[in-house]
Image (cartoon, rainbow, N blue to C red; front, side, top):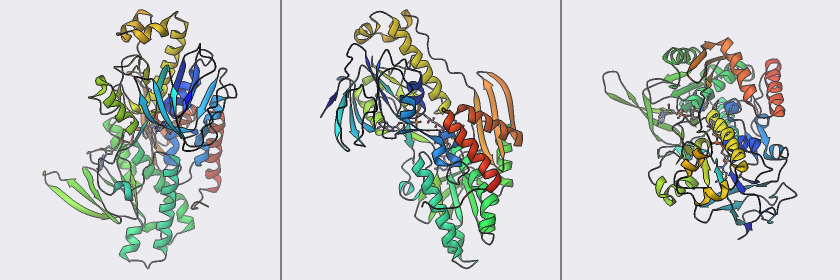
Amino acid sequence: RVIHQNKDSEKPTVAILGSGWGAISFLKHIDSTKYNVILISPRNYFLFTPLLPSCPVGTVDEKSIMEPVVSFANKKTGDVTYYEAEATDINPTEKTVTIKSFSNINTISPNSVNVGLKANEVAQIKYDYLVSAVGAEPNTFGIPGVEEHGCFLKEIPDSKKIRNKFIEAVEKANLLPKGDPERKRLLTLVVVGGGPTGVETAGELQDYIDQDLKTFMPNIVDEIQIILIEALPVVLNMFETKLTSYAEKVLRETNIDLKTKTAVGKVESEYLIAKTKKDDGSVEETKIPYGVLVWATGNKPRSLITNLFKKIPEQNSANRGLIVDETLLVNGTNSIFAIGDNAFAKLPPTAQVAHQEAEYLAKVFSKISRIPNFHENLKISSTPQALFKENGVKPFEYVHLGALAYLGAEKAIANITYGKRSFYSGGGIFTFFVWRVLYLSMILSFRSRFKVIADWTKIAFFGRDAFKEL
Ligand code: FAD
Ligand code: NAD
C-alpha cells in the first residue's frame, strides 16, 4: 500500500476522479499553479458522448471523439499527475482514496512523485480536496436478462459491441431462406428506452440500413426492422409536445416501429417480454423475438458513490447521487465536491450540466486560493456554506442552453435557450445543420473537431463502412 505524496506540500492536493465531462472540464479550468492536481480514471481519454450514438454505424469514427487525458494535462502549467486507475473506495474521515491501478505507466508528470504502481496494484492517495466526477452507470432496474443479453451505449466498447452484433446478425440471417422465422428474429433490432440515447441510436441505425446496407445487401435490407420501445406515452419527454410529436412522426416515417406506453419486464437470449398499457386501461403482454437488443433506459449511481452514501450521515438518504450544496460541496463534508452525473443538484444528468458545474468549481478553487487562511478555516468549519458566503463565493447557477436530438434521415429537433429565454425551437433538416454546428462547438479539442468534420465529409462522399472489428 502506497500513499501518494506530492513534493510541494505547501499547496493543497486536489484529487479529481474521472476523465469525463465533469473531470476534464474541471482539469481544463483549474489553476494548477495553486494546487497539486491528481487525476484518477481507468479510462485514459475523454469521450465526447453526444456523438457516441453515431459510432456503432460509423457515421463518426470512435477515435474521433476520444481525446487522451495527456492532451489536456500537458497543457497545464502546474503539476498534474495522472493515475490510470479505478477509485475503489473513498474514506472521507482519513481523506484518502483507494485506487486500483490499470496500467504500469502511472504518472504523466515528470515533476510529480511516481509511486511506481504496477497493473492491479492497490494504493492510497491522500487528498486535501476531492472532486468526484465518476459519472453513473447504465440502469437495468434489476430486470432479469438485461446485463446478459443487452448492449448498453455508454462507452466506446459498447459501440463496438453493437456494431459487431448487428453485422453478425445480418450476416447470419442472410444464410437463411426468406420466410424463415429465425431470419426474421435475427433481423429484428430492439432499442429499449425512448430517451435521447435510444432515439438517436435507433435513428443512426436506420440511416445505416437505408443509406448504406441497401447497397451492400439489397436482398435483405427491407426485412430489417427496428423496434423502439418506451414506457412513457411519448419519446424524448424533455422536449415540448410540438417537438416530440414531430420526432415520433419522423421515426415512424423512417420505418421505425415505435411502441410507446410499453415497458420491457423480462429479457431472454432470443426474445423479450413487453407490457403495453392500452387506452381502455388493460395491459397487453407481448413476446418480441430479437436479434440485437440495445438497452438505453437511463443511469444509476456507481457502487463507489453508493458506498459513500453510507459513510456520511447527511448522505444516508441519497439515492440518485451525492447531495451537494450551492457550492457543489457534498453535504456533510468539508473537502469533497461532486459534479456531473454522480452529484444530485436537482439538475438533469447531462454533459451541459457537468461542464458548467466544472467551470464554476474551478473558479471557486481559484478564488479560495487567493483568500488568506481559507483552506485552514474550511478544514475546521462546522458551517462551510456560511464560510463560502462570507468570503464572497457565489452559489452555482445553471444556465440551460437548450436540448438537441438527432432523429435519423438528416432531421433533428432543437430547443435553444439561454436560461428561461427561448431563441429557437424547431425540427427538420435545417435543425439538423444547427445540431451539427452546435455539437462541433461543444467538442473540447480542435483535433477532435477536425476529425469529426472529416468523418462527416467522408461519409457524404463514400458512405459508411460495414465491417466487424478487424
Ligand atoms: P462521464 O462523462 O460519464 O465521466 C465519468 C468518468 O469517470 C469516466 O472517465 C469514467 O471512466 C470515470 N470513472 C468511472 N468509474 C470510476 C472510478 N471508480 N474511479 C475513477 N474514475 C471512474 N449530455 C448532453 O448534455 N448532451 C448530449 O448530447 C448528450 N449525449 C449523450 C449521449 C450518450 C450516448 C450518453 C451515454 C450520454 C449523453 N449525454 C449527453 C449525457 C452526458 O454524457 C453525461 O451527462 C456526462 O457524461 C456526465 O459527465 P460526468 O463527468 O459526470 O460523467
Ligand atoms: P433517459 O433516462 O433520458 O431515458 C430513458 C427512457 O427509458 C425513459 O424515457 C424511460 O421512460 C424509458 N424506460 C425505462 N425503463 C424502461 C423499460 N423497462 N421499458 C421501456 N422503457 C423504459 O436515458 P438516456 O436517453 O440514456 O439519457 C441519459 C441522460 O443523458 C439524460 O439526462 C439525457 O438528457 C442525456 N442525453 C442527452 C442527449 C442529447 O441531448 N441529445 C443524448 C443522450 C443522452
